[in-house]
Every structure is written in structure tokens, then in C-alpha cells.
Length: 430
Image 1 (cartoon, rainbow, N blue to C red):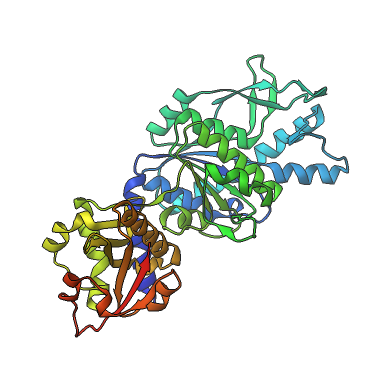
Image 2 (image 1 turned 90 degrees about the horizontal axis):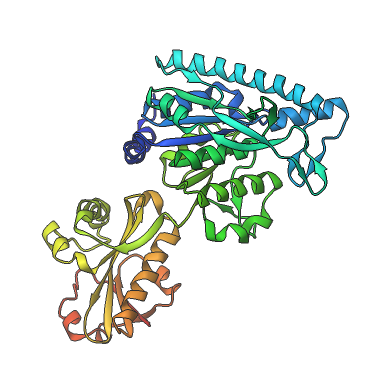
């Protein structure tokens, strides 16, 4: 028997993302890492699924690993200047063959996936990128290595508007007719910038970025890129630099996804926690004051905790009347947590209604909400924060609260104390 509960939960989580992705443009850099998903039909089927959800897709094929294998087989080391490969005449001929084989292999997987899913969207490739020679830098002639001169945005958009998936590679002609080998990362980032794409997705062999202590990072902002860059592998550094260029060019979000993990694309895009590393101009999850249009989300968040007795019950009318006291953790329009500050007198406030979505119970959500409430309390001139809890005294103690008694509460709060709940009282000096 199929276990339906995880599937239903995943669909419910994915629903808001599916709706928000309609009509959006994603540029995807495909990795050719040996054994990666790009060589497996499941990734192509995932891409077809995104297209069926009305996502406009531009795919950019990398053949870096295939070129590396070709060079190794020849026994002739590939020459580089900085991070750019020098393409001589012999290598350019080989790259043409490698790129052609990759395009035909991908087209076969795409055709099969479309047939299996009863799709009709054509995959279109063409002269959408114009190249220019990279020339001589630092006294080094890059020969047939080039860079992006122009992207035919009108042509790409015309194909996307017709429902096609656009497929690009890293070979492009200059106006002179000469063919050049470009960096696939540059093609992807410049295409995303020119299209004003909503997302740039970069596949590679490393699952996630890591912090300086080697812990996985699921989200980065452009401000923190330079700090963590030295801790990354050279391959991840290349992808991060590509993401940074795209963000500066106006792309909203970049996703670094593991090429060898089945389903990594869907879990990264359609779940809150993701599976790779998202890079944005600013943090996507933020604490903000609650609004009236958050009411239904708050009720949905707090209801299970109220039924379990962890929170005091609040009617919709009461919550609406007290909405100005609430802060929420907002992630892409989804409310993952809440907390409220109730001033009791001129010097004391109460932290209440601290709730976290049970599917995202990481300590950071609760801690960030607590910090936001403390900051707001200080701004209001309060010196003490109190909390009444039945289940989490240790959690609050770890964050600077100390046990107190009923006599430590202001008179107006004493009068409201529920002896049946018998909540523990903790306070914190601000």
C-alpha cells in the first residue's frame, strides 16, 4: 500500500510555490558530471513537469567534464589562463563534437519524457547567442575561447511565448562567422540577466555550500558570499561567482543544486527547506509585523497548539483585535511562526503565542521571533519580558529567562492568571 501521508503533505507544501511559478522564467545550467541526473531521464521529466506547471524554461548545457575527459584521454594538459580554458583549433573541433553529442543525447531524453507525460512542447535550439573573441589577456592569446557579445532576447522570448523549451549550449559564432567556445556559466548568467529571469538554477557535483565550519548552508545572501567563498570547492566557487554576477544583474534568486541527487530540482524549488543552496540579494525568511491578511495563516498555525493545550485559545475576532501585537516569520508568503508582545505596564511586557510550524521546528525560527520581540520591547521602553509556559521552560532558560513567581507579575497580569493551566512563569531583564 502506498504511504499517502508524506505525498499529501508534500503536495500541500508545494501548492503555493506551484501557483507562484506560473508564467515565471527559469534559466537552468545543466551539468554533464559523470553519472549526474542530466544523463538520466528523471531530471528531464522533472524539467518537463515544471514546464507543465507553466514555467518558461531556458536550458544551458555544460560539457566541462566531457571536455576534461577528452583532454585527459589525449594526454595533453588543457591550458588555462586564470579560470578560462584556452581553446586551440584542435580542441575547438573536439568541443563541437562533444557539444553535438550532448545536444542529441538530451534531445532524446526530452522527447521520451514528453511522450511519457503526453506533452507537446518542442525543444528549440538556435543561434540565440552571439560571441566575441576573448582575445589576449595578460599576454596570453585565448585563441578560440570567447565570451558573450549579445543574447537574442526577442528570439528567445518568442519561442517561450509559443510554449517551447529553449536549449542553449556554449558554442557561438561571432559576427565574422568564426565559432568560439564560451563558458557555459557565462552563457547562463548573461541569458538570465538579459531575460530578467526569476531564477537561475545551477547544477553541479557539490550538494550545498558550506560555512567556514563546514556545516551545510541552505540559504545565502549576496552580502555573505565573500565570507564563505574560501570554504568552497573550486567548482562551488565557480557557481557562486556565477550566482553573484546574476544577482548584480537583477536576477531575483539563484539555486545551487546537486546534479547527482534524484529529485533535487523539485525538492529545492517546491519545499521550504529545499535540498541545495539558495542565493538571494536578501534573506527570504524574515520577521515582520503581522497584518490582517495573515489571520487565516495564524489561525491555521496556532490551532493544533491550542488543541494540544500548548497555547491559550484565541478566537478569530480576538486575534483580529490584537493583530498589532503579533510578529510573524514570513518565508515566500508562508507564515512559519508567530509571537506576540503584550505590554502589561510601563516596564513589563509579556511574550505570548510563540508558535512554529510543526514541519519546520528548527530552533532558529523560534529564536529569531524571540529576538524580534525583545527588540520591539526595548523600542517601547520596556525593561522586563515575562513568559508563561507549560511545555518549554528549558528552551526559555537557555535564552536568558529565569524562573519567577506569580508575585513577580504586574497586578493586571496576576488577575488573569489561569490556575488550571498552572503555567510556569519566567522573566528576562532587557
